[in-house]
Amino acid sequence: MADVLAEELRSRDDAGYMVVDERWRILASDERNALTGDAGADALTGQSAYDVLGEEVIAALERQSIASFTLDHASYVLTINTFRLPTGLIRVVRAQEEQATIERVMSLIVHEVRNPLSAMRALAQGLDEAVALDETGQAYVKRLTGEIDRLSRLLASMSQVARLRAQPMRRLEPSMALDRVALMFEPEAARRGISIVTHITARAAPIRADPDLIQQMLVNLVMNALQAMPDGGTLTLRARLDPHGRTVIQVEDNGVGMSTERMQVAMRPGQSSKPGGMGLGLMVVRSIVSQHQARMRMTSAPGRGSLVSITFPLIESVASERLDEVATSPLAPPEGE
Image (cartoon, rainbow, N blue to C red; front, side, top):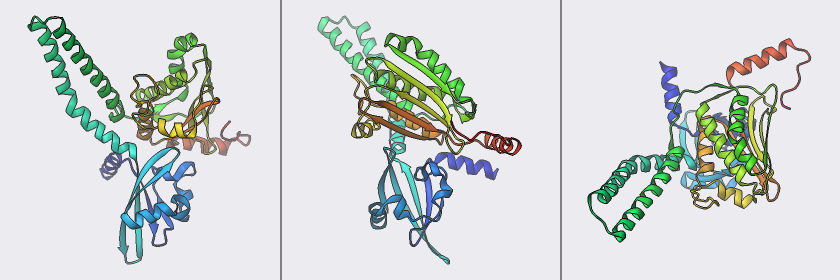
């Protein structure tokens, strides 16, 4: 029961934590903390928080107990609590992505607005049917329902960002997810003069995931990639291992690419460069990545295309299999490609 309760409490808090001493030496860090990077939480232990966070961030935390921090084009809000113990002073630093706050606000808006909006549309349609309106009146009703439909589409996009996990996590083979999305987009890609190439490393490990959310994540990334190649090109869907044996799913295009400044803007909601776009596509992706306790990195350069990499945590059963494999095979190849 205690384990279940701990997991339930953990699932409600998508922040990561880091414990430091009076001199800002890192004593411990939560694996969920994005500040750990690819090296993992253990690699931070013993380091100085000044080297990890920077002097300006620590000065802000000491001065006002809150600070902002940017890592891999994502912004985080850092807060701190200080405790005086018999053994000395310790600080607990909490790091939460700004998007998590936005998601909660969106969830509240969707919940409060969706039903009244549906009622408004029904009333507008009823007015058109109950009253003999002239052309001007019908035009007003058409404009009104059009605006209601536009708001409904916005709510649908917001609900994707704010959506809670719909089903329990289970083992998912990356090849199944990538092949399914590739097959889905092949006709559209062919019309655009784009070739879809799927490359899956033979030893790419299963991930613990919600298959529907992973498909939704890949659909958003593939759509972005296709739109970034107006003159055709190659879209590569890849699953491989990183040096730590973790599965990495990548979506790479050789399209127009983005500058560093444009890439930072693109990661924020409301910044779509597409006509009529709402700028929520990459935010949906980041939300799904966060729900899977994975990490996302994006690299891009003008004229050279973009690469999005999602690194998933290694599930315990796979880790055990890897250890057994290494122990029984003297010629086991190194992890990765």
